[in-house]
Structure formats: C-alpha cells, structure tokens
Amino acid sequence: MFSDLELDLFLKALYETVYMSFIATIFVCFFGLLLGIFLYLTSENGMLKNKYAYLSLSFFTSLGRSIPFLILIVLLIPFTRLILGTILGPSAALPALIIGATPFYGRIVELSLHEKGKELVETGLSFGANTFNIVLKILIPESLPSLIRGLTVTTITIISYTSIAGAIGAGGLGNLAYLYGYARNKIEITIIATFLIVILIIFVQLIGDITSKKLSKK
Amino acid sequence: MISINNVSKIYKTNNKEFKALQEVSLNIKKNTIHGIIGESGAGKSTLIRLINGLEDYQDGTVDVFEYKNIIKLNMESSRMLKKRIGMIYQSFNLLERKTVLENVLMPISINGKVKPKDLQKAKNLINLVGLSEYINKYPNYLSGGQKQRVGIARSLINDPEILLCDEPTSALDPTTIKSVLDLLKDIKSKFNITVVIVTHDMYVIKEICDYVTVMENGKIIENGYVEDVFYHPVKTTTKSLLSSIGLNYELIVNNNKHIKNKYILFFDKSILNSSIITEVSMKFKTSINILYASITPNEKGVMVVQIPKNIEDIRHSLMKSGVVVENV
Ligand SMILES: Nc1ncnc2c1ncn2[C@@H]1O[C@H](COP(=O)(O)OP(=O)(O)OP(=O)(O)O)[C@@H](O)[C@H]1O
Ligand SMILES: [Mg+2]
Image 1 (cartoon, chains in turn cyan, orange):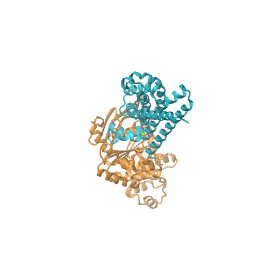
Image 2 (cartoon, helix red, strand yellow; image 1 turned 180 degrees about the horizontal axis):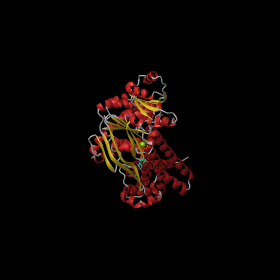
Image 3 (cartoon, helix red, strand yellow; image 1 turned 120 degrees about the horizontal axis):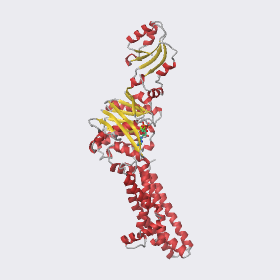
Image 4 (cartoon, chains in turn blue, purple; image 1 turned 90 degrees about the vertical axis):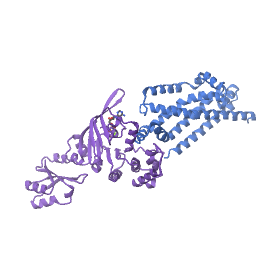
C-alpha cells in the first residue's frame, strides 16, 4: 500500500512526535508542579497566603494559557533561536511546548491541591510539621491520583500542540499530515497520520487512567 | 492546664469582619473531660483550635501547660506544644493513600525518622482501639467508626497530655457513637489525659463529660459541672439543647402547673439503690406521684414528684436519707 520510503516517513514522524511530547511532558510536569504548588500556597487558603505573589503568579499563568499556541511559537522565535540556534526540528518546538503547557498544568495542580487541602494542612499543622514537610509528605502524596489525571490531560494537550508545531516546521506526525495531505494532495497519508495521533492519545489516556486508579487505593 | 483569657477572634473576609469569638474566658482542668456545646456557627471549632495554636487571635491570651500566650511562641516551642496535644476530627482526616499503620505513625514520620519503638507503640495503639486485623488496610476499606478509631490511635502516638476532639462522633451512627465515646472514656482514665470535646449533641455531654461549656454567637453563655448545668440551666439555648435528650424536667414542671406541691428530688449515687420513695410513702401512708425521673451522667438521680399530703414530714424524712429536695 505504501512504499518503504513512506513507511520510513511515518516511523520518523512518529518518533519525532513521541520525542517532543515526552521531553516536553517531563519539563511541564516539573515546572507545572512548582507553579501549581506556589499558586496553591500563596492563595487565599494557602499556608503562605500572599495576595500580591498570588495575583502576579496567577496573572502570568492566565496570560500563558490565553495566548494561542501558534502565536506563542511565533513570539518565541527569537528566544528559541537564541538558546537552540535554530527554529526548525523537534527540539526547536520544545520551548514553546513547555512554556505553553506549564501554565495549563500549573492550574490543574493548584486545583488538585485545593481539593482536600484544608483538612490535610490542618492535620499536618496539628502534628507540628512545617510547610515543606506538609507539602512533600502529605499534600503531594495524597493528591497523586488527581495529579496524574491532570498530567494525562496535559500530555494529550501537548500532543495536539506538537501537531500545530509540526505544521510550521517542527517535524512529527502533524508535519507529515499537513505536508503530504494538504500541500501535496495525498489525503491517505493525512488520514494515517491522524490515526496514529489518535492511537497515541488513546494510549496515553489508558496509561494515565490505569496509573491513577492503581494509586488511589479505593 | 488550659486557660483562655478574654480572647477575641475576628475573621476578615472581603473587607467584612466577623467576630467568631467575643471576649471568651475559659479554664479547663487537668484530667477532666470538658465538653463544648452550641449550635452550628457558635464558634466551638474556633475555640478548640485556639488550644493547639491552629487559630490565631486578636485579643487576650491562651495559656497551655507552662506556655504563656501560645501565639507568641517561637517555632520550636510551638512544635513542642503541638506534640503534647492530640487531635481528632469529625471527618477523621486520615491519609487515604497510607495504611492504618502508616497513618498512626504520621505525626512521627512527617517530622523525622520512625524508630523501632515508635513502630511498636503504633502497633500497641492499633491494638488498643481494636483494629489489629486492619493494620495494613487503607482507610477506604474501613467504616466510619473504624476510621475514627484510627484517628484516635494516631492522636495518641506522641503521648499527648491533652486530646482535642472536634465533633468526633457527628459523622457516626448511634451505636458507633456510643462505642467511640466509651473508647475515649477508657483512654482518658488509662493515660490520664485531659479531653476537650466539641459537639452539638447533648448526648455526648451526658455520656462522658465532667464539665460543659455552652456557646452561642461567639460567647460562652453557660459553664460548669455537667450536673449543675443539666439541673439548673439558666439560658434558653441550654434548655432547648437539654430537651433534645429528654432532660427537660423544667418542661414537665411547666406543663403541670395545675398540679400543686411539686418538688424536685436529687439523689446521690450512694443512695440510688435504696427504695427511699417507697419507704417514705409507706411510712406516711401517702402515695407520692412521680412525674419525671432520670439518671445523670455521674449516676445521680433526679425526680419531679407531687406530694399530696404530709408534706413537711415527708420532706424531712427524705432529707434525712440524703435526698436534696427543692420546691418548685
Ligand atoms: N476561615 C473563616 N473565615 C471566615 N469566617 C469563618 C472562618 N471560619 C469560621 N468562620 C465563621 O466563624 C463562625 C464560627 O465558626 P466555627 O467553625 O467556630 O463554628 P462551630 O461552632 O464550630 O460550627 P459548626 O457546628 O458548624 O462546626 C461561623 O459563623 C463561621 O462562619
Ligand atoms: Mg465546627
């Protein structure tokens, strides 16, 4: 059905998409967690309640979430060129992916921590524990299932972002779908590429569901 | 042991101020079970949380153990204070992703390393609350009563001198309430702990408390021995709370205004088993009409009776047998 050349193209594109999504997810997980924890801690009910810190963090988070991803990539071109020397290829998409998805995950983390936060913090405080230990040993472990669910949603968002990035030169399945299907009129390649993206997303969702269910001890 | 002096607490939300506590003063004696009761929003939780420093306050002082004005303590002293006070909650506040054993050890493990002797102590406590079969189970596997038992075991891991209970039985069914209260009573005498218990249920006060404080709108409106408050309530709120457990002999008195010569009799524990009323009845050939009878938490008895004739003789005779007689 497809030539060897085309099969190679699919494999390469799949690899690039997985690479971009995976690396970006790792960074977003780290930065988003930090952002979410600080949003939570400085908020109205947080242990380090600080109106100004919260409002400014919250402002940048909302700003980051409201810039359309395509525009974010364009805005970040000088920055990307500065740190990576190029604006093409899968690695070049990473800064935009990370900066685009971190606020998204940050908000999810903030919400997750608020879920049972009040009771858990009070319990920790009554043990005489400090803020650091309460976050590290109570809040995060107890919120883990919910944090994993949030990370699943975030990863899926990142995968769809990679398609947008792909269309403007980052490679991956999005690039393939756009280049062959739209520009060269080979619609079947677009369909297969889309199918692969869908499979990837279903796979991520499945892994996320299983992990969070396993962790929830219900 | 615990001394709260003229404390006021204001919550500020969106430029609005709310006085949750208004110049509250309260002393809680060592080795007693002290109940705090009131309607929802009365300020009970706010008050109990003052004791272990979970709540700050604007005016007054809170002194606990040898610490004066605990709000001013440095971090280290504040930690030491909290270690000496255990707490249990209405919603149990267990960690869902930790086993029963891990939950009980949490007050230690969150601040440092768990030593073998801590582990042994945790196991003993889990045994004490009757959950040894469940030691490696997760809280979601347990019933409400069992969860509260885990909460109780956890609160005891640091050998506290005070146990704070914020509505510990409000999420439980009647039979379970009884068993949790019995456990608290046992623990109090076994470990010589001072127990402070917040509730909106007079039954809890009746079952286990020595002292009771009644709160309304951020103020203490009545305070004293359970006996005294139960049989000589002053405030309407207290009376209506009491009628919820049938301890409303005032109501009986008022509803039987047409009946003359009513008396309230108080019996001491020591004379509860003797048949005083019958003896007096026979001696003076008078049928004494019992309108109300009940037994108090400390096993004193109370009765409302009508004495149709020979009143003075009967009164004398009763008082000689150790009964306190009050005219109403
Ligand atoms: N963090 C807060 N911010 C603002 N108001 C509060 C806060 N916590 C409590 N309050 C108010 O203070 C009052 C007393 O609250 P508290 O929790 O002490 O009542 P309570 O007697 O324990 O009631 P309940 O039986 O419902 O638990 C309530 O009216 C409540 O709305
Ligand atoms: Mg309360």
